Amino acid sequence: MKSLTTKLMNTMTYVVTAILIIVFLAIDISIDNWVDVEFDNALTDKSNYLKTLVKVTPEGTEFDFAGEFMPEFGTSTKASFFQLWQGDAVFERSESLGHFPGIDLLKKDIPINSAVFADVELPDGRSGRAMVSYFEPQVPNSLRNVVGYSVEPMWLTVAISSEDLTQILVIIDSSLAIGLLLVIVLMRWAVVKVISRGLVPLNELNNALKSVDVTQKYIPLSTESERYLEIEPIRNELNKFVKISQQYLQTEKRITADIAHELKTPISELISLSEIYIRYPDDQRIGATYKQDVLNISLRMKTIVSNLLLLQQASSENMHLHRQQLDVTDLVDRIIEALTFKYNTITERMQVENYLRNSSVLVDEFSLHLILTNLFDNALYYSPPKSVITVRLSSDANGVTLSVENQLLTSLKTDDLERLTQPLFQAEQSRTNTERHGLGLAIVENIAKVNGFVFSFGLMAEDRIKFTVHIPNVD
Image 1 (cartoon, rainbow, N blue to C red):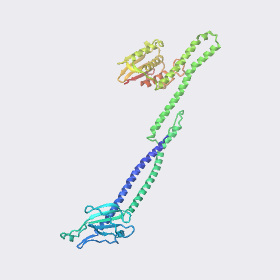
Image 2: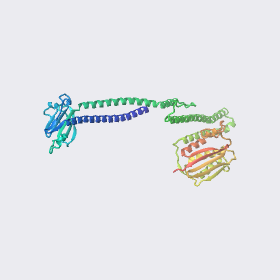
Image 3: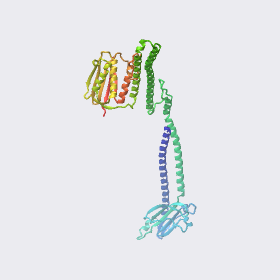
Image 4: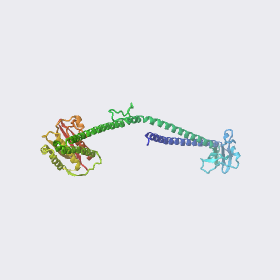
């Protein structure tokens, strides 16, 4: 199992480390370049200074060098070197080259008054850097007026050790590397602390969720004093989920109790009837109706179980739907005719208002038949015997709408209306009616949902209710 905290810490560490490495590399490269430039500038300054010591006189070219002012070109173990050429002849060599009589410094053919740098090996074997210059000695103004007077250009090579520079760069690189490592360690520590503290509200919410008991009426999901923009939506949704879970739990308990109550009555009747028949087997009054009574009670139990199975099937998304073109007007007529055996005045009481432009719809016939049968049956049963029930059929660009409106025998309370589609709910709490079990509207609502229908209902007046089913067009 992966940890969100660890993932955040590692991601932040990797990202910040990559940024730090790029920054430190840029700093290191910049410092190295700056040191190299400064080293070349120092070499240039030495070379320019030596060039100023070259003087042109009427007798020729002279090099006025004093070793006491530039001891680095002396005979020390860390000496620097220079060498002058005029034409192909060596003009001057530094005192430090006196120990290496057969070795000349680097000399290159380059344009006049230009210079080049090169990494070289010094005569004493050390690593170094040399600057080769090809220049014309400066002629005094007094000699410039002499016609035909010219001075042959000269080469000057200055070479100094770069080992100290290399050591400095190594020290700088090592310092930067150590600094980078320390910064990464400190950054990792800071990331761990910041993320751990930042996830405290989420951890508190998680701990509160662990202690949730859906059997309680009040469930605190978070104890933090502050509200966070990112946490609050999660907490609100969890509260909704817990509330829904409470409702489902209460509904399950109620359904279980109602099922037990619905089945307990016919089972008790069977037991009582059987006990009486066993005790008085010769009583003709009991024996004459015993078989029919047992059959009627069994059929009632079968109706309850069948409706419960149908409710479970209607609640399942795996319910098989066979959609086909169906004439709604013809289906309504067939259902009214089928209910005639139960309500012999149905044709007088059912008033069908047909406003359909096209009565053909693409639906599952079993689903729509079951929905309308339940709505018609409820309307006929729960309305006064001679009241009129209005069935209205209409259509528009969005689909077909079927509504059933009837008068109520007894008015419904607001709480009863909200729970009307709950399984096994009956407004009559005494449950003296053995023919109704409170499953019809629950089945209608679930089947409508599976088919994509829009099922709604509401009171038109205190004693009048209307049920509506909208069948949207199916492409």
